[in-house]
Amino acid sequence: EVHLVESGGGLVKPGGSLRLSCAASGFLFSNYSMNWVRQAPGKGLEWLSSISSTSAYIFYSDSVKGRFTISRDNAKNSLYLQMDSLRAEDTAIYYCARDRHLGAWGQGTLVSVSS
Amino acid sequence: DIVMTQSPLSLVVTPGEPASISCRSSLSLLHSNGHNYLNWYLQKPGQSPQLLIYLGSNRASGVPDRFSGSGSGTDFTLKISRVEAEDVGVYYCMQALQTPRLAFGGGTKVQIK
Image (cartoon, rainbow over all chains, first blue to last red; front, side, top):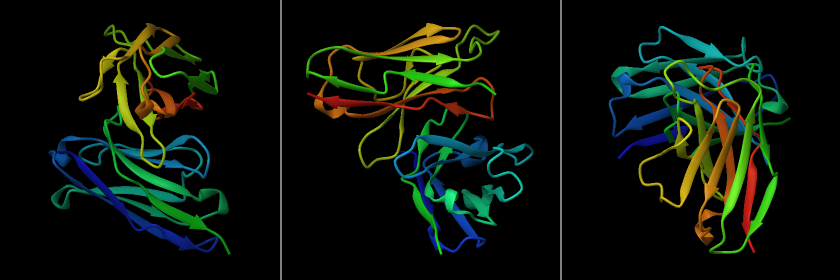
């Protein structure tokens, strides 16, 4: 069974940093592109970033480009999101999701940015 | 960038009755391979989203056959033939053509009468 588990969320002050992780199991992680998607409280879904299976291709939405960095470690079946220069508007649940069709999602991790 | 527009914003349905949600894309999602790169997701209360329909009309694994997707180009529809209590939640459409810049519709909240 496909399983994605995010971790690393928490409360951080504006301007601070957090590193999210997503542990994958139940499928051949190194064969799939991966994504980060977030959902602000009471709002819809927003795609943030994607990384190809070999990390050769990386893309970001305009809202996080230059502040967030996606990476992966195929040996550890893990996906990461380094988030710097955090703003209040980055407060959201952050999900990792598999492949271009977002065929599998984790349960999400909550990031709160507040002073 | 492709913009996705869903309607209605919310829907109240009697159990056993059908329901329909519309999704419109600002650009055609029809690929030269003949597939429409439009997916549907359901986010049940308190849960993460789950894939229901991919490539316009293909049900994801384990999705009941009361769910069906149709449409082509810029206009798509998700239909639930007979709504059940477990179908409540927010439904999102998403374009998967212009990857990796995926774009979601605003969501349609389905409630049971």
